[in-house]
Image (cartoon, rainbow, N blue to C red; front, side):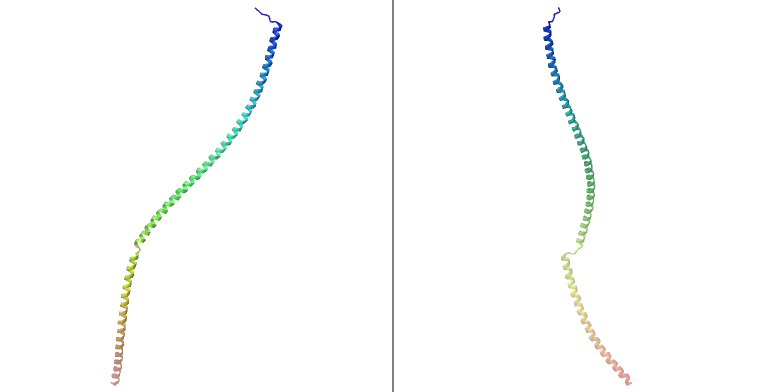
Length: 171
């Protein structure tokens, strides 16, 4: 059962196939255009990715720099901590010195005379000074009396010397 195809029918069929092929060729060209567009998009994405990679590398470099800065700050902080410990030790030493000085001041205060003690001492010195002056006056008066007696005795001895010389001259 073979059917024969007429030329007209064959012509229609080929014409239809030609039209379909032409449509397919347009579709293929559209797909080709889409693919070229996609290739451009992919190249753009590739460029964007390369830019992002450069940005990431820059960020990575910045982070390494920050890490170095942080390590420097850490070192500085350790140095400051040592300085603070030294200051703390100095302050403890000063605190000990101050406590020692407070003890010395308390000792000096306990040895210091009070105002009342000074007044009592002044009164005692006044009394002793008066007694000393009175003793001086008595001694001076006694000395005057003794001088007067000595003068009398000296006169008597002088008279007696003259009498003895007179007696010797007579003999």
